[in-house]
Length: 206
Image (cartoon, rainbow, N blue to C red; front, side):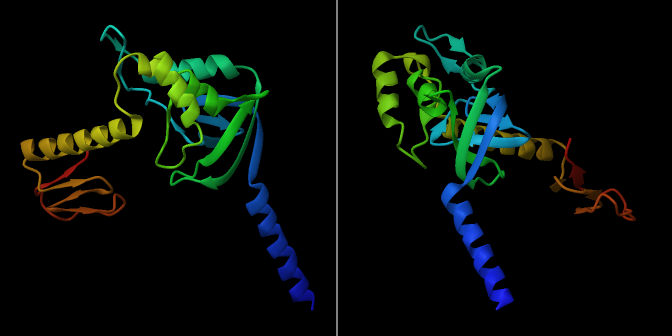
């Protein structure tokens, strides 16, 4: 009977976690246009995707502008030295809390999309599509010129990074690039192990 009661308590606790999710409030550190950190917990803003910090867009006059840095800077200016409240139910593959965050009565996700500082992350949600349409019609922020959608930009960057590694491998005549561990002969081994093989074609990541 005692074990049954414990099981019921644990079960109800897990249900509560699922219903109410995680809630956080406090001063936030802005990581980029769609990510913040509160009390050491990294948070990915729900339903939106902002340009990456290193991403470059084109303005109305076809000039380069640092849209990723602009998105981050505008968010920092909005929430600087203010208490932010966030609530989320899930974690992403980087263990960031996926949450909706607010400053007073301002929905941060809505504000970023409305000001052309982020797009709707349609792969996961269309909740802020109304705000995106307004931003498009008013040609504000990224909609005032030309840009690559952030998720596509990240994909291009990953492919470019892969090609650079392959090129480096070919130029060094490496048969294998050791991303983890270290090179030993023609293969990779744990970096804590001693290598007893002669230098081969495996290379360490530069």
